[in-house]
Image (cartoon, rainbow, N blue to C red):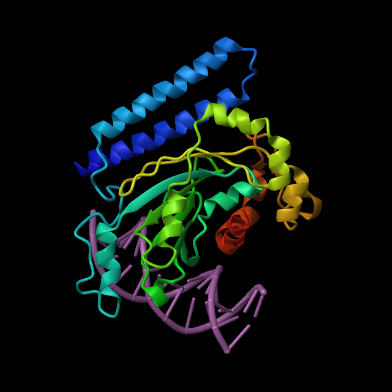
Length: 287
DNA sequence: GAGATTTGACCCCC
DNA sequence: GGGGGTCAAATCTC
């Protein structure tokens, strides 16, 4: 049963991704090609229905079927360690987001306005990219046990898995709730609307296009869709990786038409993202 | 000097 | 025994 539930969540995640891509494709489509646009819309709504079906078949009643600690937990016999640490893994609410990052300000969305402290990074078997582990900065001062894991997906270098485990019990709790229920966008319409406001977005660095499905206690995914960022903006945010002085190159040839990261220079990009969460924190605060 | 990050090591579960 | 999650000392940054 656990396996089925896990498959359901994977299926839901995949479908959500497909839906996001369909909407993005629609947004990029030539408006004159009515038939193609209709097809994209039909595809998106069909996937929508599929997601609902998947979720009804695999109700999200389990906290975290995908948890590697899905067994009977641990803790007993964990001499010299915090027993609670292992026991808590078992029943913690787990929320997964998948975040597509295609521009600098997009990466700000990877953060959630909360204070996280990185406490570890591991290479995951079979994964191209390491997984970074963060916990609430107030873990010790306020006993907040919220943690999150961030890992770049194998298939799409611009897509990040962000898994939240546990809830904030610190003063950030309300902020966390707000962040995790960030206003979802409707999809293609909103994509197009935002596309038309490109200039305004470039000046404000605020606008992002998001679509999000958040379920407490399950692992839905929520692709964030973004658009391009001008080179000068990239420069201002990443002077050390932008083409101007650099060893990291941004390009605009990503399939979604967004700013991508040259695969040859992903390491600095990764390093920055994983090693400077505080950067995104400040970006969020500036919004 | 305080706080954050890095990274090797440890521990539990499968 | 291996993989994943966490700890904690060393190191870094401001």
